[in-house]
Length: 233
Ligand code: CA
Image (cartoon, rainbow, N blue to C red; front, side, top):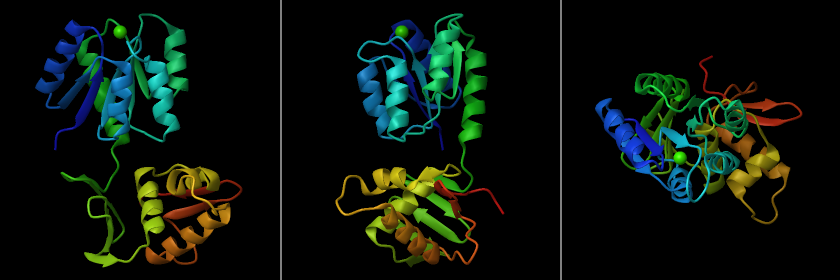
C-alpha cells in the first residue's frame, strides 16, 4: 500500500516539483497551499507523513504543528524552514515537528529524510484497510472499520468506552498518558467522569485482552498514568 503524504507548500513551482518527484518515488501525494486548509486535512489523521512549509497563507507551519500535537494527531511532520535559521528549526522541533530541512534542499535528501521518518513511525502489526486500520497485538486484532476487537478471529464484546479507550491506546502506543489526558481524549467533556473512571475501564479492558496479574500491554506507570506497550516481550 502506498504511503500517503500531505505536502503543504504555497510556492506553486516547488509544490509541483515536490508532487511530481514524490509520485515518482511511489508515494500517494496530496497537496495543499493554504495553512488553515492544510490543518483541516491533517486533522483527519489519514496521512503517513506531512511535509510542512513554515511560511504559509492562512496559518503558519508552527501554529499548524502545535495545533495538531495538542489534538493528539501524531502524524510525523517534516518541516521546511528558511535557510540557516536555527531559531525556526528549534521552534519547529519544540512544537512537535519530527524533523526539518532548510530551504533550498536537495530532493534526494528530502526523500531520504522522509523514508527515515516513515520507518521510525511504522508501527508493527498495523494494517491499513480501505475503511480503517487493523491493529494486531498478541492474538488480538482491533479493527477500526468495524469497531470490533477480535480474538483469534472471534469478536470480543466491548462497550463503547472500552472500545474507544483501546482504540486510543493502539493508536498512541508506547507513550504514557495521565488519567486526565485519557479522560479528555476518550470521554471528552462528559459529565460524571473522574480519574477513577479511567482506572475502572482499564481494569475491564485488561481482563478482556487477557492481561493477568502483571499487565504487559496496558501498563501502569506509577504516579503518572497508563501506557500501551507494543514492543514484543
Ligand atoms: Ca512558503
